[in-house]
Image (cartoon, rainbow, N blue to C red; front, side, top):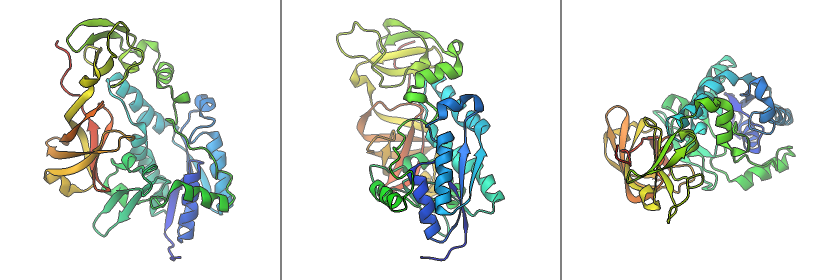
Length: 366
């Protein structure tokens, strides 16, 4: 075991991953301080009961920290979470895009706002239970996929800048989920068999439409009309916020073939529907690009691109453009390339950058 007296602020969600991360860091000689973010306003506490960073999560994290012999604090980030994550989530749907709040939470809160707390506590690093590998080199940090392909979470960290990556530790990246649970059982941690959350932490039942109705109110929905790709009127809808690219459910019937949402026009509030073939595209642009490897921004590169977290990745050519944008040409056309989602760029298992998918040209004549 190496002797390392550096201090680490560990984000503890009350789950098995961050709990075992604390143990691994402690065993490697770090001085570990556990922190759980309280991201729920008091009037929303009931819906947070079994969620990440809810009351039960705080209790579980505190229990684990006690078992590991590390201090534990709760920091109130409710206002910032509302502003930086929930408001972003809602406004993206209002703009006809499909958001990824986990990326934003990592960038703005876990590896963003928490740094000031870490500095106040004399910490050198922030650590999390993400399944990703961050290598620290003298001149830069390198972000790699976690070795367990079923759990790899490097996609959610693509927007971290070099200063954030250089002070970040992800001790689980070289391990698999079964290994993590076995360590937790060997330590008799109460969270050893706790079920992983598969939902957006602030959306009860994973029903984002119900959440938006509650958060925004019915008067904030952008109602409009549904057209097909040939410009034919199909029907009316109750809000562009209730649709996402590739959606089939909730569309008017009467078509001989299945209809899918193929475009959302926030200027006219039109929902455009078409056949499955209309969902396929072979090129698109991304904006707000973050190049983790700055050299990649200066050359056309053949890479692998993931257009959503669950996507296996596909070969592509990427060309950097002006104004922090890039053009992506897919070697094989893909279905449902969705504006607002992240396109993350890999060279082998190394994340070289990524950005946010832009809307293509309107699919219906004006």
